[in-house]
Image (cartoon, rainbow, N blue to C red; front, side):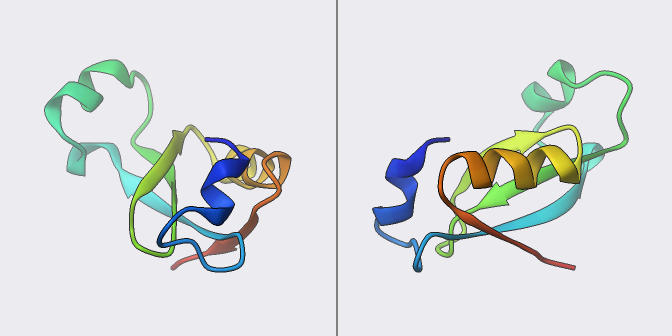
Length: 75
């Protein structure tokens, strides 16, 4: 993910959404790459496009902020 997503179609003022995802709900090829975690955190643009998938919420927020994006939790 990088700052270009802030101005990409579907972006809203640089806001991205962070939500927890059960590893079991991911496609099989992604599940095969994730070991030892039951939950990961996804960063999405406003249009729903996933731009990052990380191990924890703090990392999701840090990555968003490092790319000049404003993360918001989705419950």
